[in-house]
Image (tube, chains in turn blue, purple):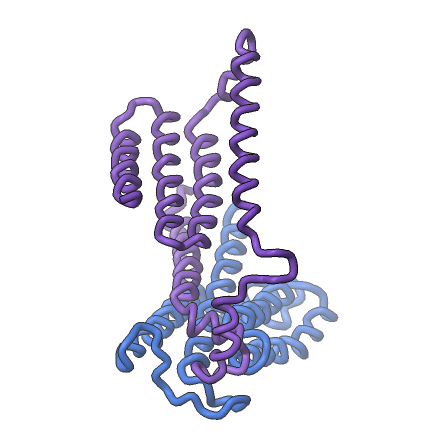
Length: 147
Length: 171
């Protein structure tokens, strides 16, 4: 299905996509995980993660992208991201208040620091990335069935 | 006291918008509820919410009027130009007077009010442990806002899925 020349763009685009799409996904995950240290965070990193899947869909056609992540899995993952964010918020009640930062602060400039902020970033990243890709996928499917 | 007057006015306007027969009057009554809510936010000392509510309310009012009125509204200009001109001038005068009062309250140029921001800048690192102060604000100090934004995105995705799903569409 990947090497089908009928679907998607030309061979040049497919080859370049195969080389770069992993790096784009990795960069998005880096932005999400380092949200409390460097510019970025859940929203920006999630958009980059979604763009890597959109990249696959543009280059290889929608069947390949749907085999990587189906629309049901996408909506499930988005709900999981939203629930994770809510759980992080409710975890604050263990320390006394909603959204209280109860985990250890750690030393500044380290990856494992800032308490619950990295957890919130990860859940928002999952939510935004999968949600944007789900919107794109729904619009593509609508375009396919309209004819 | 002002809050109670506003709340009674909002309840009254909501009942009017439900009971009235004319669609346009109903939409205008809904708009009155929204603007009273905007004033209530101002009374409760939340000016940022009041500005947001004002903008959203104007947008909603325009969209609702366009959606409820099928034909273009009749524009009556003959024979009333004296009244129209005088009322326009009066409203422009009132607007200029209030904006003059508001502009007098602004801080001088180059001296911003940094009451809240200074606290964030000084205590952000020690209170949250996050080096990136943006993230510290949106995920710790203002996490409620972020939860609301995440809810908006979640709701929009659910709405899109519900509109575009296969069983919902007529073939």
